[in-house]
Length: 542
Image (tube, rainbow, N blue to C red; front, side):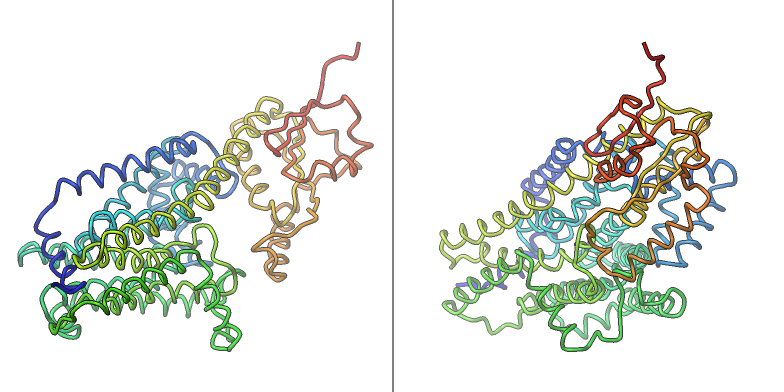
């Protein structure tokens, strides 16, 4: 009778030496899944979003007036003043140079990047020894959660970050399973891609030690060496990303700062009991954590009923737990000031999804485990995937794309009712809508025949995250007031606007505020799912 992890050890060699027909089937199914999901949610065709998409227009204009190199350098240097995303900044300018202002091309490319990322991650996990179904589930559990929006939000650094992380994992696994000639190329590619991963965003710097650990763990398991011996044999390509990530952190501490942007970062009370308790509560609050506990109980129950192997087993679950914790803990610490939301779920969810599917692979791959137990363990993982998909991934992506369609409709509506001689009044909350207002202003500022834009600040009655942080709320409000200071609307000397753009939730307050300015029947009303445009009726009265 074989031991659980002996089966998985054998799987490392078997998966590396053969690319099975079912692997092809699984990869085709992953491709079809993403194409279907993104097409059904209209991710390819929903259009322009007011959050960050306006930067495409700015960068495209700058490339046309200067050069790609100058634009990339200036954009990267500006971003370094607030964040640490140098590779992402250059990559974003390259996207602009390639796709211009064609939002559909951007969306299709982003979907293809998501597919490529999923396939790389699948092959990496397979080469690590997991079965076909657990590997596919690992990929889907990693992305089918609130982080699914990274494949439809055009400005997220997490999309290229996860691609580079998956690429580094794949190259690291290929290096372990290749001969000496190819190994050098794969090791070099692993080190280079992992260093580029660190340059995508601060959160990915913190994932570098976990990726290095993962590769050394699998190497030691395949070669039958101790962990320290595995490090000694691969010191050059293992140490270089670690040293590089340490230098990145040093740069952040010395140049950018670690206080964050108001909703993330590290503060002095990090090691206080309250902070530690809060972070622990966050770590166990995700539904997938309950599934991990159930799988662990099932694994140890059947392990206690089988004969233990005397052979040192490099793939024992403790090392999988260490890898997962190396992913999870730094991300929880980084975002301990706020809740983990949207795109911040990656690379965090890779830690949860891997340990869950690792246990699944142990259970389903062991001959001594009865078929009903294997079925139950698989059903648990599928249930978690279904829950994450229908509770978070699907509604979040649908919401974002619905906003894109509404915003694009608002833009098209404004373009038809305003010209260079027109005035457009934009009514916005100075905090919650600051990104919307800035984006709308930028869109028409760079238009060939844009109208005059004027802004009115009207506050919503509710405050949502991350603006429930008082300091961050005030900082955003100050920024908005400064940005729009020369473009405010004043009823005492300005003409009645040709169009009025109202962001969601502000129309009732606008009607009360301007009941003397806006007379009944003077404007046609166009409601684009909460994004309202009032178009002045210039027809002669009968």
